[in-house]
Length: 261
Image (tube, rainbow, N blue to C red; front, side, top):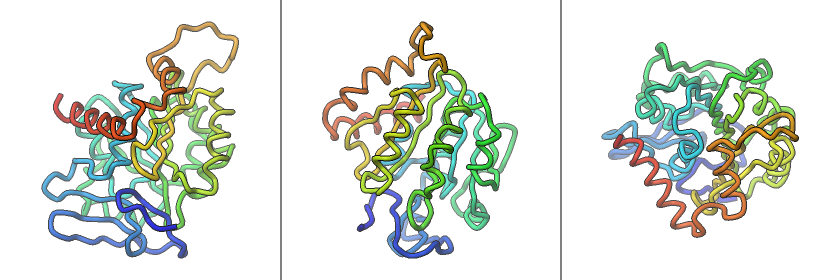
């Protein structure tokens, strides 16, 4: 499958060492030539260059003031840097499996660890197995050279993701539309999150960003709907603003608003 030029893309080769390529104002992280995992503007290192990253920031429509954001996958740190700068009240934890990726954090101007920002060298599968009711927003963007690892698509991992979320917490999953696991992942999310799953059509090309809202474990609960659940219910049938172009404009508007405020 050819790589999408504006999003991380899978490769047919086995996992390779990460490569950093700088040309003019842009610096890219790749696992193989053309297999772009992350891209940064040297003039504006906290900006979100890739469409899929802007689309993932639409989580702020559901959770505008998260206390704890947990990210699976560091890459070039685009989402981590943006959240660190523009969501100053949030505590941010990033899980990265590969030490060689973490070693590149200075080249991508990822801030050092401090009281509210931490990059942990860990397997997200193991980490989330022991994390319960601690996270407001969980961003799963953990790709390797072959695409989304099967372990991050398993029913057990997705159930662990839900258990890690606080009530009304949000799981944001980046999945390629052409991934052989896509239909299975979507079905598992619907089952595990009691059908509280939605997305914005064509917001980021082949990257489908799926938003799954944690609700009451007791399905008979009559607890009032939260902002996240109300938005999910509205989007479930509409998949955004109706047109891909409008959804992409929405993602731009969300990012610009967060940077402006």
